Image 1 (cartoon, helix red, strand yellow):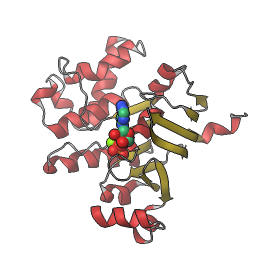
Image 2 (tube, rainbow, N blue to C red):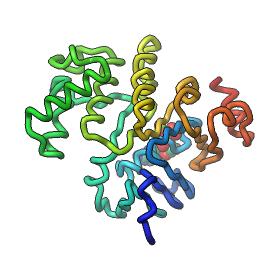
Image 3 (tube, rainbow, N blue to C red):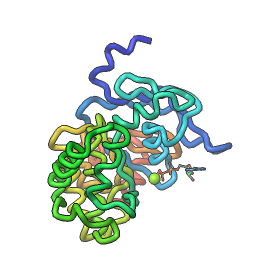
Length: 249
Ligand code: ADP
Ligand code: MG
């Protein structure tokens, strides 16, 4: 298949299916993400949102279909997985910072190991991104010394240090105390304003309205609906979407 027309597509999922044993968790997922596009993915718990974005990062393997990142196909046996992970930044609900490393070291590690960046360059870039998320003054601290919101901003800075082509967020504010949600959402809004491609699993519908080009609703492993935020919220086409919105809004 000719992929030369892929340059404007950061991610392309074609007929993706995934099973956990007998459980069919992704059913014929077709999803194309354009460069610079911001997608919000929502849906009930257990609908397959985390699995979908973990497949893009090859944290999960698919059994059928194809996934391309920047025109490179993610191979069935994890071929290209390292190559692709470098281009895909991921931020998790539980931050997943290395507890025994300082904030600065957390942001330098992958640059040094994966990109083979020099110490000076890795430190420079780490400090630049820590400044970008307004947390540079905490660089010498350990994760446990920071609030949840601060830790999540460090996790975002750490991902940005790899110059990802796309950022994946999996419910990045769900584990935070309410007063910390805004600082993380504001950080994500500013990344969106900078034109970073992102797929964000979240139920923060204010964020969706502010930055999403498309809101996608998943249920039971299927994409049920995909629309611009105005249409999605004011006139959802599917009964299951209406029921879901009724619960969370
Ligand atoms: P969501 O993120 O939308 O809540 P998930 O993608 O986490 O949904 O899960 C989709 C379904 O797959 C759920 O039924 C979940 O229990 C199941 N599942 C997720 N991860 C695993 C796993 N590692 N092994 C078996 N089942 C899993
Ligand atoms: Mg999930």
